[in-house]
Amino acid sequence: MGVVRREELQSRLSKDLEDRQSLVITPLLNAADAFDADSVDLRLGQTFLLPQSLQQPYFCPDEKSRDTLYVEAFVPLGRYLIVPAHQTVLGATLEFIKLPLDLCGEILTKSSVARTFIVIETAPWVQPGYRGCLTL
Image (cartoon, rainbow, N blue to C red; front, side, top):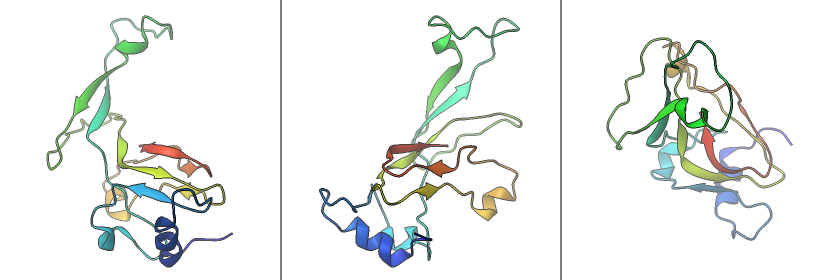
């Protein structure tokens, strides 16, 4: 199957949840503006993981150090998260998605964001059957 057009995406969104070809994107607020000809714009959620400086010059991935790698930050809708230069931040989409087994997805950075040299994703492939919020 090739690129899925807007009409097919919208048709699959309206299918019953039990239908094997149904697509779920929720919440899909302002759906009229979310769709392009062959894509859906998703939004950032409100929770972010910010890396934390380590006390030692090495990292040992064990149970004790697992929770010391990052600080969780909650950003209310309409507010901004200021990211320092050369910093990596993990976020997730506000929308939960469920892809059917016959569709896959790809995360692409909008050109207006790419021109600011911000990298939105490093693992752009979304497997068929994926369920959850996408990590960015």
